[in-house]
Length: 278
Ligand SMILES: C[S@@+](CC[C@H](N)C(=O)[O-])C[C@H]1O[C@@H](n2cnc3c(N)ncnc32)[C@H](O)[C@@H]1O
Image (cartoon, rainbow, N blue to C red; front, side, top):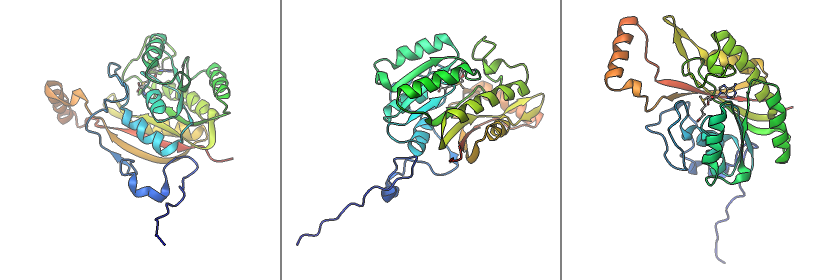
């Protein structure tokens, strides 16, 4: 009688397709809280002409750990569409909200031919408004789901980069408290549209103002908690390819840092939250 090795049936958690019977095979999936990337991934049609986009590897890591094939991701600050491209590449769907109409059109055009038409919906709107909630819900229902299975939030880091002249743009708030207040609205919307038991991920950095560190990351974390989310993990990620750190400007920042006693930001946060199961 020949002995054949029988593969055990896959075992997965409720929120991921990672087969736990083969967990040693997933060496590319991070489980540590320090993420160091040398460069941006340049595959899958990503373009890098948009200042302020995140590197696709963030989406790849998060989608692999916290979503399953066929799941829907809502990205409330879609920007140049990084999440949408990675979602479609991994067999997920994405509903993205972006405030700038020019960018919305450019992203729709870029995605045509790159991803299946029914995998991505790009909504033009304000993520801090109530009206967008119904539009997201309508799209979810059209795709046969009452909730999203993951929410991504990569907001402006307060006024560090001004993304547009639009007063609804979170980068145009007149104070950090106003920014946090409006971010709180977005956090509540994220909580409403997310399926209980599933995850929301916030990508954010801190800032300096008036010679003092403003811990934007932790203040936004508090807003997520106030909205009902529980904190699962905080990852520290290097800011790769940051031109400020190089050449003449790099030296200038280094000089200023030595003179004024601060450290130059080389990191941002990837914060993972969950919505408690009902
Ligand atoms: C940090 S970028 C996101 C980049 C994105 N993750 C990517 O990889 O391209 C923040 C984006 O939020 C948009 N934004 C700012 N305020 C908004 C609001 N109230 N509603 C929706 N989008 C907003 C900006 O126009 C900008 O494109």
